Length: 355
Image: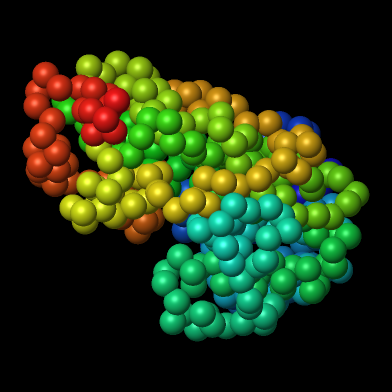
């Protein structure tokens, strides 16, 4: 099996390259060589997918059984379209890593693969949808990029993967690393909402494995990638962070309404916390039926902590700075909520609910 990974030097792209080599596949990566490093054993082709001459040079280095595109997050649909067209004659299949943000109803509505997508043409430029919120703009651009792949390779030769949140070693966004470092610090830890809140992160290595499995199949399709609904919870995540770091910290649960009233930003200041009804209601049954296996979140937590302790450093990315509440704001909110040093978060939450 010969595979081309667009990206291939960090996080998901790196996991894909490592696993593909482990399967005995021939792996080519295409990137600018500016972030991360090449996985030993790959054939690295340097280039910029926005440059026509670089795309032509890449195509001349083919052919491949499949392309897996992990690097299009910052590229407009027309750039994805140009790349797909350049590779269509030298690749049998195209696996495109999109996002649940591409759905018109996310995060307000539960999602299946049949849910409507945001409207964007396959040749949209960088400005298309820019008047929307940052998350909606990102979703519009990804929806258009999906259409670019389908317009070039067709439905039978295209696989669209729509993950929600991807966690694991080498995470560049900083969500799980922030919670691990916060747990390590100990003390009274502001925990958002309720411990029973379902969440659906998926491990980067499980996404990589499923993407490679799909690259090797003979059919196309679209798949949501998320942990099984109801299996993982916010409480389970934070308990795993405490256990993994050996922390003596105490989780102190504060209601969503109180947090909102004190201006806490969902999704970023307290990573993975979001109250929208569809944020963690992603149906991934199709992917699980097709072979997606999601390891327990506690395993992802432990492996990410081991990576951090071993000196692991993610590729520098501006989104890292968006995550985490300041110690001063955290302390002020806990004090305003009336959580004393001897008071546990679980007890305070039960009282607030009238239990």
